[in-house]
Length: 324
Image (cartoon, rainbow, N blue to C red; front, top):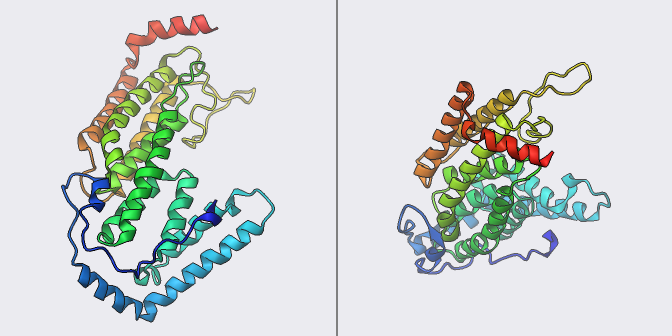
């Protein structure tokens, strides 16, 4: 639980002099991380810890996290907004958004640990990798950087892989269902567009997951477009907010072409937003990311042409007949 998270070594401790072993857990386009003069880092840290503008916001954040967790653990209701993980995320992100305080702040490692653990618990795994990899690179040479690498490699990645594997499972009775698949795909794209380095295990697994997500999304869209059993219900619930026309009986009208086109447009819009809010450079595994965008364009054209899944329509009809 969040209360069981122990405070790790504070950032004030002396950093290690070599970062070569720490980089073994990280991998990316570059062969090594930027080197830092450890002595210079120590002197800079000492100056900052004598600066009240740095220390006071730090103490304020620690106090706010402590008070918020105390209130969360004493509540008897099950409101998700007051769960310890949500409380930590809310407090830290509100603090980060404060433009007057945030630039002066150096968060204690305890706060970093609590925040990352909370993100993992709430399955906000893309935020985990974006936040922790950037922090790890920024403090390379300090012992806490190695601890962050271990968390990503041994805790965050296995949970991310589990989420991805579940997202790739297909409901045989409703093969067009793709809510979790869309979430997983966008999560991986955010990671690839926002991180400069990844743990070695995720860096190696990402191309295969990107290929599998692309293929599964195409099949799901073909099922939406071609499957005669497609009823339009709950398919896009939780993925998109689109107002549907209803018949006199109050039921949403089924329009396979519209639903498939809407989902493709939604994905293209999300990809564009991810690119705009990324790190401003080429994503990791650019070939796989580019192939995904190109697949969306081809699917959109096939929908307009009426040819999406044409080769599979006979098989889909046979399967639906067997299952009815």
